Length: 228
Image (cartoon, rainbow, N blue to C red; front, side, top):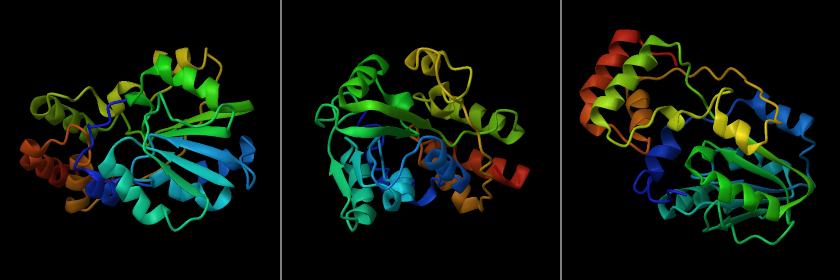
């Protein structure tokens, strides 16, 4: 896992990254049977965006996050919950006990993992019948604004590999290979309206953080009067 990519970005990530739609959260609990008796490992949990949305609905939640900056932001909100356990560890080596969790979640993080090692770790820590849930807040690829955003990122951000490194979609071979082709794909609308500060903050919360392109980001916002 690339644990240093978000160093120094914890506060801006926590403030400007969106939550997940409540329809998605409800779907997870209704379709996977996650419930008040479930033990969950939220891997690559970052600032705890997803963890916060399910913490009151599960028995125990491990927030697995190797980046100190991101993990400390999560702890500010989540340490008040008695069923939350913060773990300084990577996705490929969580340090959890064998067959200790019912569910593994990876929200906006799977694209950073070593897929082979993560798969092996999932097999080790999941209880029999356990499930793995991968989540993304995906951009609409047919949006002209996002196309312009992509161009700016490629111009100003050497580390940019595409939004979510290009694998958060149904055609991703990495996802299909990880699940051996056996998985359910479900999408929900999560429309987000940004003011200028929010739009720039959302972009600067990325690992590639296009600070040199901030003037271009302002131009995109003003041109498209953005609703993402």
